[in-house]
Image 1 (cartoon, helix red, strand yellow):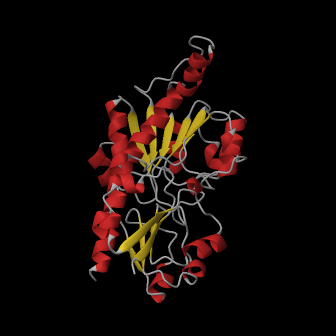
Image 2 (cartoon, helix red, strand yellow):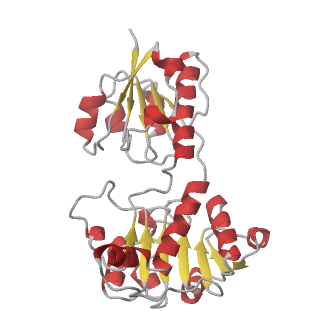
Image 3 (cartoon, helix red, strand yellow):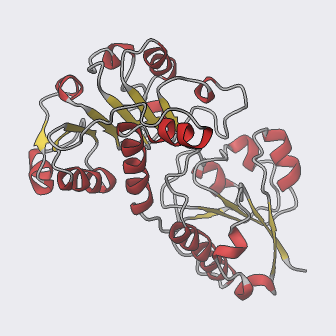
Length: 319
């Protein structure tokens, strides 16, 4: 009897197109789920008969309460090499091996700049006007050259965003709780003395921080109030870094020029979610990791993970 593998959140039906599953199909039946399943009881019911699960990013939490109700599960594969919503101790107790995949930092860097440029040049407004017969040139774009780009986080992604900003002729500064002068000098950016200084001085602020107890709620109403009324805020990192209610209030009241957001407190966002109608907001449905190359890596490595597990030698283990 073949093992059964569930591929979750395959919204674009891309799992089979992005990788060759033939090496495991003689031993594994692959079933894809195109719709997101948020309810834990429904997940437990649908996944109870699966031996392998491939989950996309941190879309579906796997707490002990769910893992305990998946008696056949033996291998859980998460895209990327970091996943904060899996209970690794519970997985170990249940005899579940957890593996990951590689992930490229290029797609989120590119999307960051797509959002920033879209805001700066009012691309959505102008495109809609052009298509709908509206006014010809109704906005005036914001120049990037000479403006200050403030980065919250200067890791792999933040460093690459910084270099693009420098290519545009922007003055780039950065801050995080553990950012050193050595790292800032390595990238060639200014080290802001504090988070507050960075927010006050920046024309564009982009967030590139991992979510942790230290970064959750890092930008609340008080911090957003430090931004210039002409400033733009970009978040392709994690929604919980920003107080969502405070951000929506700042946008509604015109206290900042705009925001570009790719991450949300609820994903997929319900039809009535306030971000769908917020003014001055350019929003995308968490596309930061969604690219042909990344999907080829995610699902290609998932096949490799399954092959290695079946051979008794799991690779890319997470714990």
